Image 1 (cartoon, helix red, strand yellow):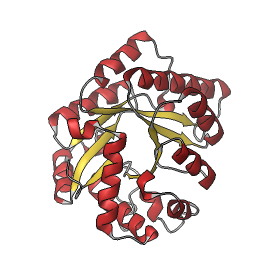
Image 2 (cartoon, helix red, strand yellow; image 1 turned 120 degrees about the horizontal axis):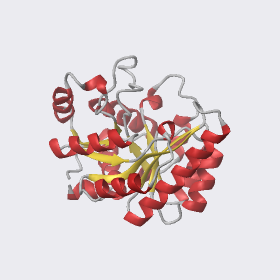
Image 3 (cartoon, helix red, strand yellow; image 1 turned 90 degrees about the vertical axis):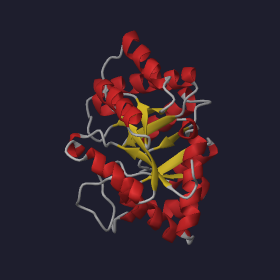
Length: 263
């Protein structure tokens, strides 16, 4: 994979919001210098679909997994199916997995989230794959689980929303932080300052499309082509030229997800 391209390391172009023009969105990404789009599954059904998209479009890759908001008591058949999908060379990780306490307040359902998070981390270890982790308002439990159950596993903290201390801990663990549209928002709060402190070699750029479109397209439906605005803001904050950020974040993505060069 070329270094003079950008990789949208977290997207959802499987979303129904793209049903009418998915091909056009992918073409637009290519024309804007995007060389890879990693679509993350969040249910069993969407995990199957993102793999189908990866097989249909050369530019697309996939993560397979169950998102905390979609948590259910997964059985052997479910994990066996994830493992079968994950053997495909275009599946780069187990994801999007993790914890979300923002939407879920029920104690038992939060416990369920933790169980399937741990189980999917174990699956990633068995398959020797990295993980993409969703963490919203669950910083303490997420880090505790990663330190205890995630030893030896590499990954990215998608759409990073934690503290500088957590970011530094992740760097020590050989992890990455993912930055999206919020980095460009005027009310971005602490994220720009955290990004300035974290080595560029530990940052991935992502859109999380169709959500959280960056400035100057905030309020519109997000798409992979817009990851360029995130990279441009990252370059501005780091005091670097765009080409440097483009090259390094692509190298970072390939380092975490080696199948980007194999698929």
